[in-house]
Amino acid sequence: MSFETTRLGALPDATAPDGSEVRILCSASRGSLAHFSLPSQAVSRAMAHHTVEEVWYFLLGHGQMWRRSHDREEVVDVEPGVAVTIPVGTHFQFRSVSPEPLAAVGTTMPPWPGEGEAFAVVGIWEPTV
Image (cartoon, rainbow, N blue to C red; front, side, top):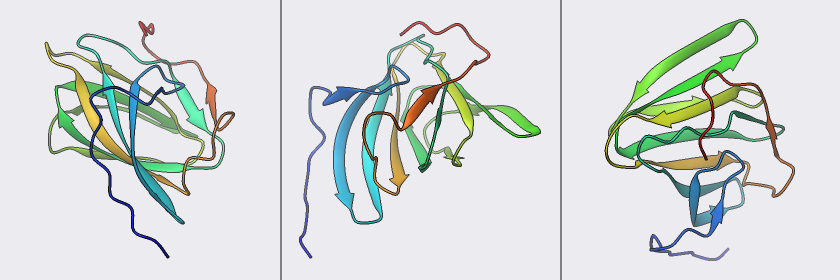
């Protein structure tokens, strides 16, 4: 067992398949943590995951998240203090509706396996990233 300590980087480590900026934080055997940021007024690409589920906690900005799974579909307003789940296979898309970026930290369980995990789906908004 080892300890890991990280600080939020000034620059993104990657661009997520949905188009948001990703800053990788910590990873453990059963989950990983990252910071996601979407520019002001931007709309992500709609995605789903093959094997991981996620929990997001919003830190900055205001926006909306669309989720659809089987016969359930909803759009929720997101802002600092709001947390959402994205179960395996759920279609999701999010957008910023504020002058500042929309930012969240997200836990992925199990840890993000890499390229090919996310796949594009049809969303409800036209993506801008």
